[in-house]
Length: 336
Image (cartoon, rainbow, N blue to C red; front, side, top):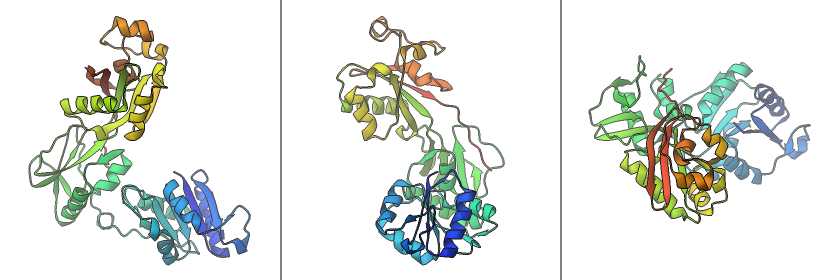
């Protein structure tokens, strides 16, 4: 986590130093009013709020909540992308998550800071207050994408009123979270997995980012061809592209502009391996003498996908000059 601190008084700077001691690796910068000239603090200019809001994981204000609200208001966009915003009173007695309590982690940060400062965390989100399952907080903690934020809101509201059915392609440990029960039918429910499944009339899917996509391609391939091949293979196999954790290939392709552009456009991290690293991957693969003659390894996409993964779930599939394979990293559902 990358956090930034803002303090607005001498007492606030003293509390900010306590926060810095509590989170020495997380706090990257500290700001205060220029007139205080505190050692270790940068002079605060209002333009810095927007910069920090877009680049940091957490903004920690030591001062009145009103200050924090006014300063972040112009930059608030979406609970899926906004950073955590936490406010601490000058005396360090209360820690209040103001924004992105679940997905951004402000609630968890507030609780952690309160424990370390000997303060009280003032968490106000309804599911937390009532001890119910929070789908967005759980998804954020366990590296899952949320299929529909509107449905997530509907599910959270339903959980507050009663129990919501929950199912998964993975084993579900018991007991299930408060506000859920095991079920696969109904008007509204939750599905956990990388498969595109809609067992409920309205299905909220929580999708783990654990599918590694191995890619091979001919020289000069277009970005559109790469994206189309990946999307086609996922659709044919009932997989959700939101589960992609990265694109993997051989280092001979690290300057392939079409491949790089496809990854950048879709926010897919891209990783490259040497031929030796790929040859060292154990397993049964679809061999190609031509690929071996060009790359030095008999198969690129399957080996690249499986390296550091648990199992290959889609074998080599060729589409318009692109070969695609998909492997899954180890992942399991955990509650508590």
